[in-house]
Image (cartoon, rainbow, N blue to C red; front, side):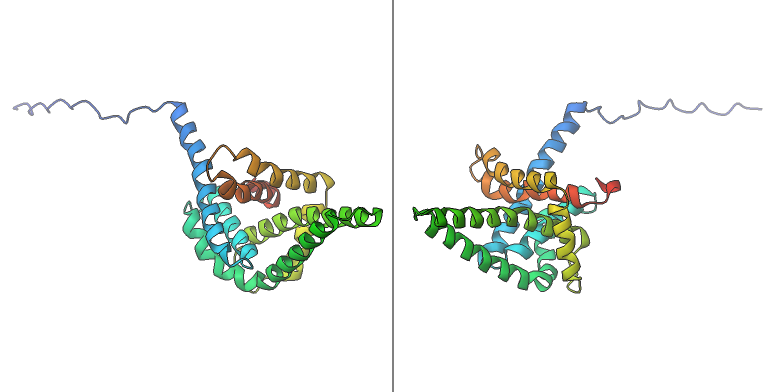
Length: 216
């Protein structure tokens, strides 16, 4: 019986080049710079109308939340897409918060030039209210971001959960306030760093605190 012809020897297998661990770490580090920056850019563009800042902030938080959970890495377009739903849900709150902040800042500027003890006490109270609004709105944007852009959302429940997130623990509120103050300072070496990372870095912290334990 004739023997079967010998099969040709298989050529050398093509293996994908091994990439060192530092390569993956560098890619992750670049992602933590690029995606918050893109979300921050979209937030700035959407906030040009002033009263749109809170829905834009929640939309940026939603895009960053989807990136953190591995659902979608398109943080710029994701912010733009989510803005409409958040605008319908939060425009009244955004308008009220904008007016309140404008009044408080005006009062602080006026009282800062008054030498009387009563003016100083009022000034301290106004500054305290302004400081409290920072972690509250960070928490509100984060809670809304985790829930998603649903115009039919329970607004009262959203506010309650934001208050619990921001002030349920004194450490949490101080941590969010410290992050909001420190983020622009940390980003100062970059030309537009405070504008891009000042809003998004504290928002990432708020998202971490607002996410369910299994998603952190």
